[in-house]
Length: 438
Image 1 (cartoon, rainbow, N blue to C red):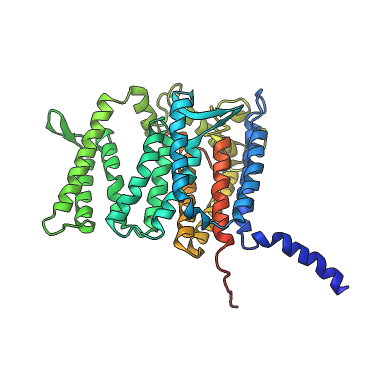
Image 2 (image 1 turned 45 degrees about the horizontal axis):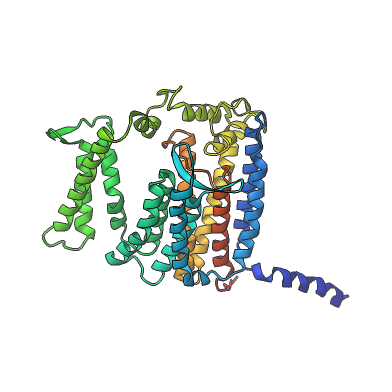
């Protein structure tokens, strides 16, 4: 009897041995979110002559298989291929500009049969692999290494920005900042990196109690902009080389002044009125609700209508009557809010928090810097997309076209997320076995 019982057990061990150290909780959480996302897509399209939900589930199934195959392969092998991955990423982005398919004013897809591939989505994984390989030996503790990492990122970021795909270029920025921070970059340097963009925003948008101070005919700044410039000068003086004559602080302040004035010029002479409205409409609830503010206005109504428990699956009036545009993609969270209420939204957010916690845990327990940086890159990608997407649906962020990971419809995005998951699971699977003492 003992022999007969041990045989099935040994067989199970044989079949599951390649994945025995995987983070199964992380795996099943992402799979569950994907299945729930397909259900919500089905609800949004119940009265429409389309059926994207089965594509969503099909891509999730393919992604699960790919992630399991990647998880049983040693992630260290990616170091040898990271320049090939980098070249392939850039070539695919160049190919989009040459033979890509245009839609909604952007050229982001390559049509292969009936399938539209979006290379900028897969480029997220490509840049995570490349940056992890660049930073795992030469950390970001020195400025030359930081500039080296930024130089590697510059080309694919520029190619994506020119498509134009502002949403993905923002995700790239979040990935780079997260990985540089994890690679021991000085936090002050990271603040200074993004400070010119913040200066451009502070200078361009009229904020309450912040009337512009006109210095010359073409040079003005706001009180908030002035405070920001001084603060960046102090950070530059404290963190950059050359503190003796305060040239570092002066340079940081000058860079922010330049960034602010460039922002004002772009706001007044380059951006069109509808583009300005799209960027600022979330600051003005109720503005142009039949035009540029329509998406967010309808999304907020749908989420608010769900109250505590929601209307129930397939019963949300805003969802079933198709009042929320692009609800199966960018605004899928509004369907959750309407049909499952505050409780449903809270469960979804807590699930994503647990996913992020498991990603952070894998980064902390990885056996080397390369694996740790891979996990942090994926974590940065997921956290940024989650915050912007949810913020967008509730009116706390501009409509940026960033999908909710594993829930929004998007075939390339779904495969990208599962490829990233497979890489992180490989890091977990091949970390050193830990001993636990009780």
